[in-house]
Image (cartoon, rainbow, N blue to C red; front, side, top):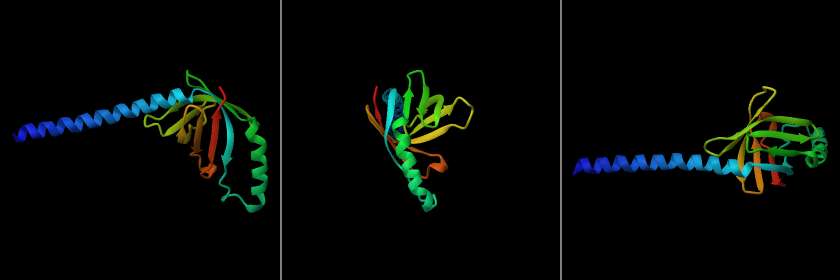
Length: 145
């Protein structure tokens, strides 16, 4: 009887583990499908605490000018393109297996850029760049295509 209970327990644990792994893969696939399209920045939540007070207003004004110019294209074949005032940035994108990160590998061999996915729906996304220079800022985006 004890052996049967032990075997049942082991099978239960294995089942739970395999189910958790499958759910993570489903999240990655689901998020990858939702990411495909063209996105525009609605707003940026800037954390300017690390910036000297005399430059904070300048940063806010520049942000207002830059936001309307930014367009991010994310394709099914994992190509990534960001167009905007600073120019064009191309790369390859992917979602982490747990669905928590958007990773972009620039084609110019710079380090992978990681952003935490705070929220993602079919038409809205909130991400937080994990770059130390971003200062916990957040980008609010909406899908246009």
